Length: 176
Image 1 (cartoon, rainbow, N blue to C red):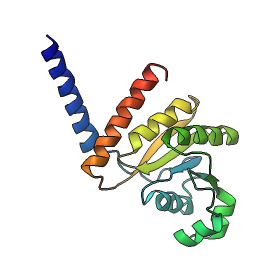
Image 2: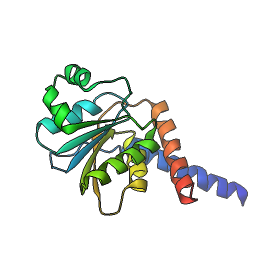
Image 3: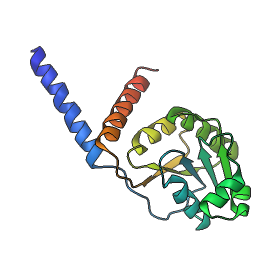
């Protein structure tokens, strides 16, 4: 009996991992939202957010998890965008140190501004857990859409992220 249960759990785990690795979230179309939130980390995330801001896809953008030493002008130069864009419309969030605190920082920022819709930008392999963390902290009236930046994650990255995602879902389920 225990062997069958263990086999069932192993099968569910394997199928879950296959789903997680094969069906990564995709980029979103050009629809507009009140705000864009970019989680720092792997490449392409900030580029995607700034590109959308320049196209008028949102009023404001939060880059969550920015190092305290980074200045807006440095980002403007690095990403070849006008200083004016960063000064008027981009907030550098410096409170977050991990995905969970990205969610907390983002929820506070959105609530303070009274926004109703937000586009979350992060890597495709990170989107599920990042969205889950944000959903845990956002008020129910805020609509979130997902805009995944395509990447080529290694098996190790997917394996580790899948387990972080599962553990975080279990922790939330039991109230941690």
